[in-house]
Amino acid sequence: MKKKILLLLSCLISTSLFAKDDLSWNGAILGQGAEENGNQQWPINGYMGAGWKPAESSWNAKTNFHVYKKLNSSKKDFNLYQTNIDGTFLQDKLHLTAGRQFLSLGLNAWLLDGMRLEIQPKETWSVATYAGTPRTPDNGDFNTDDGMISGLGFFLHSVGGFTGQIGTHYRKKDIQGKDWNENDQLFGAAYGRYQFSEETAPSLYSGVEYDASGGSLDQAVFGLDWHPNKIWNIQNEYGFYNDNREETRDTILSRFAGGRVLQGEVNMTQQALSRLRFFETYAYFRLKDPALRTQHHHILRGGFTWEILDGTEATPSYQWVKSYGGKLHLAMLDLFQEIRPWWTVSLRGDYAKFSKITSDNGAAVSVVIWNDFNVWKDFYASTNVEFHKNNDIEREFRGGLAIRWSLGTPPVIPAMGKGILQ
Image 1 (tube, helix red, strand yellow):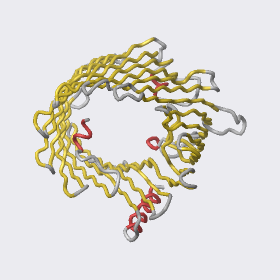
Image 2 (cartoon, helix red, strand yellow):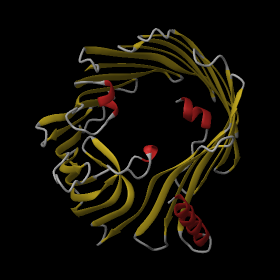
Image 3 (cartoon, one colour):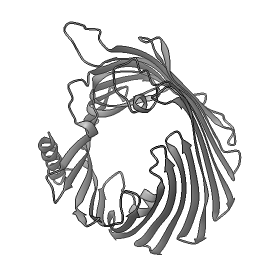
Image 4 (cartoon, helix red, strand yellow):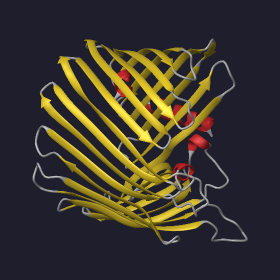
């Protein structure tokens, strides 16, 4: 599979060099050398993406993938994130996407090998249908029990400040000749967002998903985004999630929780001065651990960003976490300096003190420095130095080199360090 993708990418690039086609090609290659307790490691990660739209055509093709190789071992990996053909027809009233693609309906999102067809008779509404096999490339591209997802959705596009969707999707985990309905699930989902006309008024959004096959409410979310003035920015979100343990499909939530989850989060920022911005976050979770005991989780984070001079920023912050797994105190300092228009430096230092229910208590120190260079147009090179120390690592030093480029769109992150630290 990966050889075919690389061959296709090479063909697209070579043919587009001699045609008036719209070609975009972006990527990043990150290599690191690490020494951990005397052992050397040399991992390399590569992220590639390309898009191709033939001249005067209504369709286009795109692909994104990740490659990994550890130089001093046989370990390697290839993850295909998307490869599809996308086209619009009948005066943009018909939209077809075929191949590996990201798909969302309501509160769910999937990586799907399949097809999506959307018909939009009017600018204000459309109907879409889709079917395919869900994929999890990080766990292997093709698994015997990936099953199938199919669905139908109705969409409203900005009608009086309201956008929304309602639909249903059917999922089959696998197909068994003796039991055709084994592990089948049928969901109904709805999602909507309303933006008030006043500039300082909030926008409200809500979503719900109902498991008709299990007769239970699977997810429900309500949120608010509000910018009352130029100083304050407030975001609230509250959610309910059912881990659905009667379903045999393994999920991250089902590994750590034994019941329904209640969640709430508040984010606030204040632009106190032209060069000073404060930020605060509080999140709360209530769930049951694998022993079915009710547990409460709290996450609190606060800090500020100070633009000391033009091109110079400092962001100190503090984070506190309390859960049934333990407690964490984390202090961080981020610094960003533009030395030249083509050269920036980013630094993050953090100190963490933690206690765990496993009694593996201790502290951790980490320092990360990035130098970013704009070599030529949309071509960037970066160097990296890191130091880490914790209970498992007596001391570890890392050095890294990254190159990033962009031909066409979308652009790359101008500063590797600042992009990672934020």
